[in-house]
Length: 335
Image 1 (tube, rainbow, N blue to C red):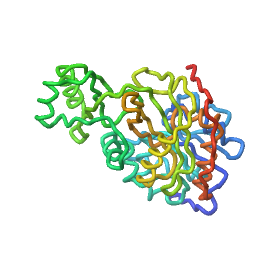
Image 2 (image 1 turned 180 degrees about the vertical axis):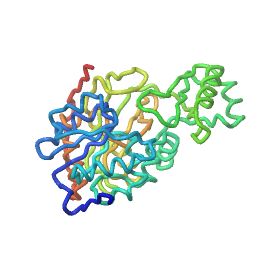
Image 3 (image 1 turned 45 degrees about the horizontal axis):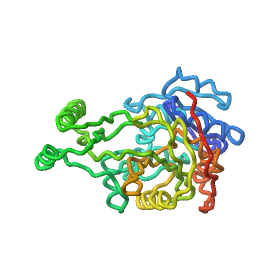
Image 4 (image 1 turned 135 degrees about the horizontal axis):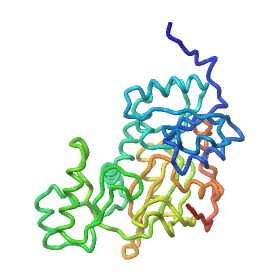
């Protein structure tokens, strides 16, 4: 006889599942902030990662890759067996799979946006066009499939152009062209390496920087907490994890972030990357990450505990937007 689970007897409101690949920079900060209030259970794809041995975990277990046809069946079995009630997912690809099949997890508590919103956020093509639609500055986009656009770039090429895939973390799948021949070669490389179902590579204006990052928490389509910082150094230098940063106050960044997230009807955590153009004196939207950012520790140090607030949102505790943070708080990542 197949074993069945009775959720009323097995679910434990004090148990929180951290679902991730295991190597994310946010895993340890989230465990550290929640371990004194909850029993934390790790569900990690990489069973060899040292985080499995974190003292903050009650225990950890290995889960399948999302490409595996048994991924959801395996994860659900382990969630029920572990008596978990609350889910926090720190990996955007795993989270995509969970959001897409949200109905399978109806017996659990989580803070996920709609699949439509999540799909817009995770795909760079869609998020850039969405930001432009709601009136947020974005780097100029060149429709490279249009012959007339190619001809114009042949005649007059900007100082630098960015080519990037529709998906990718940090500066992965991002390259730069300084002339038309390089652009053509890079674009063809991206197209031949992509699957037929993937959107065309993005070709857009290069905006130099510096880089800014806004981290936010939303509840039912309303921003409830927001922290912005400027990156003084990142790794790799072409764009990636924050190595040295400082919190700042910016009414414009706050306004742009709220406009984007609230028009997306966002629910849960998110990060938004910006470039500041000194000539035009404005911030330009670069991408959105539908997860906690690697610099999560900076938001915590500035006075807003995102992991704890996320649990409040999951538990449907109504939050007010009254979370002040400290500016000029510095963050350094040594590794």
